[in-house]
Image (cartoon, rainbow, N blue to C red; front, side, top):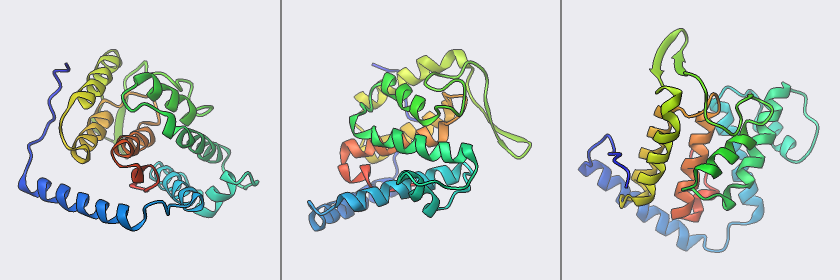
Length: 210
């Protein structure tokens, strides 16, 4: 059992929000049972990829992202085009991923960052920080700590009896704090958050949360 403890306290506001979200999800499930078409799923997947990459300053429009996923030629930055292709390949694998498997996390990162960073598919080997311009706003833990910290986080999630809406958010927060990869932490954190929520309610496999 992991010794990890979530860095927050439950509040009445959190409990109220969880109840409200759960109620709305129940309503959606009843209204749209069996009616999420493949076309709508693809559209939402494209929105997810576009939104997640836009957060990382990818400048391609949603029309360009759609064209790339449809196999059409698009004029644009080759690395940005590669980001879209990689993200689509990684998200297509999502239904087969085990959210409690560190190996699956590394495999997904390998797909997400293939051809973009040398350390794709493995944890970072050096230090990393998050900057706002020239200002350091977060220094991640040393690289030697990463494998154990990620293992502890996965074990905590697997064994926690917290509500999935809460513990998936805690997981995401801690994942970004650890910053396990040289690059791609943001997009992997968002993808894994969707995967964790999708294991609870499969609607989240197709619902853009970015």
